[in-house]
Length: 265
Image (cartoon, rainbow, N blue to C red; front, top):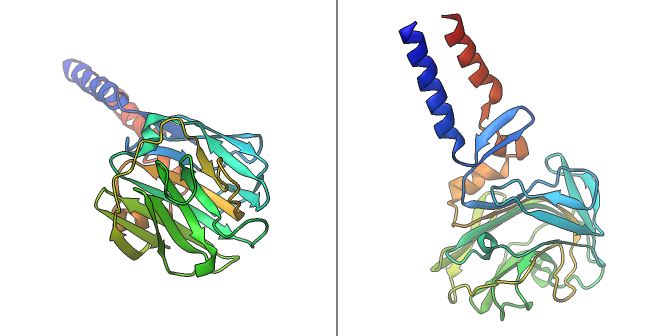
């Protein structure tokens, strides 16, 4: 009896200790979430005008126009290239003042509207790299190559992306270097032109710019922001994970099985 009681105390103590970090449960799974993942929008709701941030930050994204469609994983949002946009209110973790990683799956459809500089994600009061924060976009003149602005300047990483094809895109910055990735492979690196400046008060815009029309036409899925620069291996590991794999490290049933075993001793 004493041995059994000791086992119960150890298990309960471990559970309480593990419960202290942020835990997210989804479809029968629970996971301790990396606190440097500061926004995660899987866009799997499939309906409504709000998408939930699944990171520990717990924000909400407001939809203005985009429609729900099948995505790379589960559901996603399709932007019409005219006036659709998704916005997320400012929060301190989204300002990425010590570096960060931005990533998404995209499916480019065309060139409707003012698509010369279609935005994937932007958090700044201006377009074109002269303002605060950061700006992740596509350079249509360079075949929809990735372009990133921060620290007072923009850089295009020439690597044309094909239309009507899913591509995983990512960019990292750490105060010294900016690196761009397509489909899990680094395609270029440059020196960061200057420190990122505080974008307090500015919303995050997805698929368009909140401050001036920079419309994207196509599908966006699996938006993720990290407050650190991920490595190439980490990016490659993330790109093929949907919500369940990202948030569900261990089945809830595994803990129940362990408890059941102890009770049966």
